[in-house]
Image (tube, rainbow over the protein chains, first blue to last red):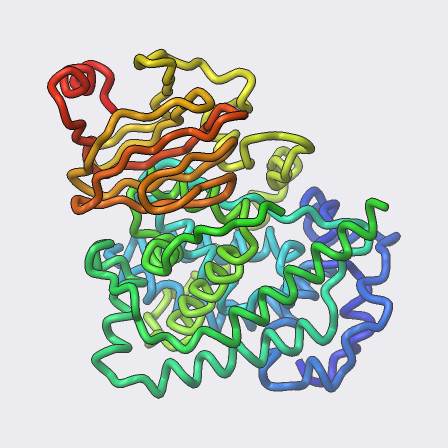
Length: 226
Length: 219
């Protein structure tokens, strides 16, 4: 994805709600520019921003090649996650296809200032898993209302993506025993009582990074309503 | 944004991120996160841990026609997409955040309360074998019956405030009670106190009369 025309990629606001009603292959022509200062090529080339460009072109151009690339990487992982969470092979396959189709449908909602692509796909897979287990839609926190000017800040995007990468590296460095325990919690193998309050997860910096992005968003919202 | 003083503990946020909490607790967590950016940032951080775990999974082989099937699923969905409701967003001046409002289908003004004595009222929102969620109304200045818990009780204040032996709890604040806790919440004067409560076992009231009431009222 490194040589794509990024300015073209970024021409559409990924959060723009009218994409939700767009049909396949028909991105609206009159989209607003995403950012006053668009994400620059070096930013997208940074290793820590992997997969963002793919999600953006899916949102904007319904790009099947980008989807295929994402599918090759994430589909086998989503399926493995579902199997680890207790689904059998057939159910995991079906459910995974559903998760990947949701990724396509909701690409316009992805916010790179608040999550990495892997994190975003994890939440879709997790929610699908819960719906299957419970047969009802789980209550989700209220969405933050996007003001007309609420656009992801380039700095926020880069910082969040770098923090995500650092978190992944820190998790890899944890003692094996602790890492397995954390994985078990996310596969649903631990009851609430077994989840220790103090997990020793290195979350401080990513947490404050997200907090900062939220504050900026709230600030933009209040400016927009003035 | 409400100024939240009592925050939810990490273990519940991990449970929510992992999807392993009983449904009643999911509701309280989602409602609390809607009121607190601190909780929202922490929840996103725990989601990020899930993202790392997903990205590090050993690949499970997908079926040969997997991508083709997914693409046809997308094509099939395209027609029905226009009917998909927009994401929930906060309503101006509402008391209940969206997750709670969606669950009960109304805001505070239209809640169908049931009196439970001493001016207190409640409504059961969801009940399953593992946990119960309910709304509780305590008149301003009124005390709740003294009670202990058999399991975990999670209380989120939505309007007004109450005090117990530990502190004051106002809108957005969350208090976790367990077996060791024996408390008497008293609503502050001035405004009636409304709480969203999840319990994974019934409350145990001290004294005979409230215990009989408990049998009938399922509190």
